Every structure is written in structure tokens, then in C-alpha cells.
Length: 335
Image 1 (cartoon, one colour):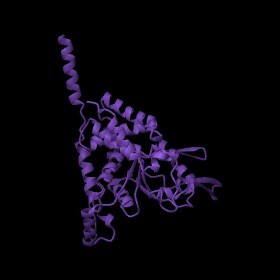
Image 2 (cartoon, helix red, strand yellow):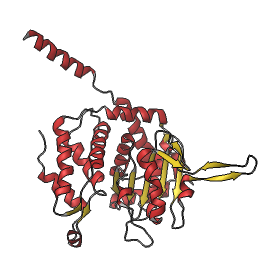
Image 3 (cartoon, one colour):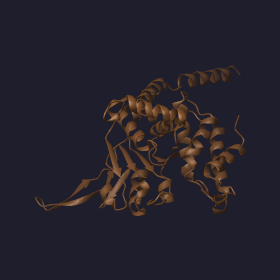
């Protein structure tokens, strides 16, 4: 009996000592928020989700009408991290080789040389991803999922960290192409950006009036190195998740597959994305363990682009977010 108590005591001590130190991570994230806050007013949810994706090493799709600071927020985030940055503007005539690179014949040595495209970078901003047809969008499949490219039978590994942030206008807008389901599934998050409220709109106008800088992004400083970011991502992987919470994630995902209002449910990739995002949300909020609230918070951004509402329900005005909310209400929260 004594031995058993001693063992239990040792386990408690071990657990206590193995707790993660996330104070440095929090300081860095606060510094990033402060830098972005020099230019962007409001959009707290967008910025928090971007930071979570950064820690999860996952790609992000940002959707919103033109002019709500989608592109500039992503650019500012890239400016705060000391890694290579590349921007690709998607257009209807963009070809896959314009993104990935192409082989050029070198006259001097009579050999083909591969010229790397803009995708060979650590932080990639793809502006208006749905302006290009499916052929060009599909060029990103391999690089987004496996972080490598196969061109002319040769493999090219991407340098870590590797993050794609894509922006798009809602599908109803003129001259846009719907993203294939396989493409959408490769994004960790889909974030919807709305209009600012009255006080935020006033602050935006006031800020613009008082700010005399030509380029507003000049005020933003680099605060995180690529090495630090990799360390933080490793730290987030070690965040504690209880078994009943893993089961809670599984129940949410399985419910999307059995839901009568949904034409397409979430895949196992969504389960893994929900787990990773929940850990990152916990870390952003200063905890080294996941709570049901972290999972709920992650669910909307992780699932809204991975599920498809049945056509009848869509005609009735039911949205993916509304169905996710119903699913979260139905499933019992683990205690």
C-alpha cells in the first residue's frame, strides 16, 4: 500500500514538473498583436485565429468582401515574423508554372535548369485565390499537404515553417471560381471577416486622418524569428489533452457525417485539425491543457469549409455555422 502511495506521489510530482512554460510564447504573441494593432483596428477574432494557425503550422483561408483588411492583416503578420515572405496575386490567366517554377534551357551548359517560383518561401500570401481556375488552384495540393513539390521527377522539400494564407471574396462576386473540396480540406481554418462596427469604423477613419506615414506597414517591426516559431509550434504539440476530450472531438466529427442537414460531413483530417487547433487555442490563452471551450472555439473555423449543407436546407437559408452550433449544443460536454 505504501509503495502504491509513493508511486502516486511520484507521478503527481512528475506531472507537476513536466508542465509547459508558455510565458515566453505569450509575450511573443502579445508583441505580435501590438505590432498589428498599430495599423489594424478591431478584427480581434481574425488576428487570434491567425496566431492559432501559426502555432498549429496550418494554412488559413480568409473570406470577406473587398476592403475589410484581409490582405493587409496577413501582410502585417508576415512582417512581424523574420522569415522569407512571398505574395502571389491569383488571376484567371495564371498558370501552375507561374507559382511552382519552370525548367529553363541554359545555353551555356546545354542543360535544363529549374527556376524556383514564388511558392518557395516560408510565408506565402495568396491574394484572391478564387480568381484562378481549378487547374491553377490544384497546383497547390501537394505543397500544402506534404510541404514538398515534385517537378520533373525531382522532389523539393519546403523549408519549415511553411504557411499559406489565402484570401478570397465571397463566391457570389463576379469572376470567381469555387475552390475544389480537396483544396478547401487542406486549409486548417476558414475565417469569415465581417464589417467593423460603428466605434471601430470611427477609429479607422480617425487613425487614417492622424497617421502621416505613406506606407502604414512601415511602423511594424519583426518580433519573432523563424527558429522561435518552430520552437513554439513544438511546445504547442505537447499541450495536454484528456482522453474524454479526444472522445468529444470524435463525437463532433462523427455527428457531421450522420447529420441529416449535411450533404457532406468532415473527414479524419478535420479531427486532426480540430485537435491541433484546440491545443494552440489553449496555448494562446495561457494554458498548457485543453478545455471543451477551446474545442468549441476551434470547431467553427475548422469545420465550416469542410462540411456541405444539403441543397434543400441551403435554400431555406441554413448556414454551415448554424449547423455547427446545433451540433455543439447536442453533444454532451465532458466534465
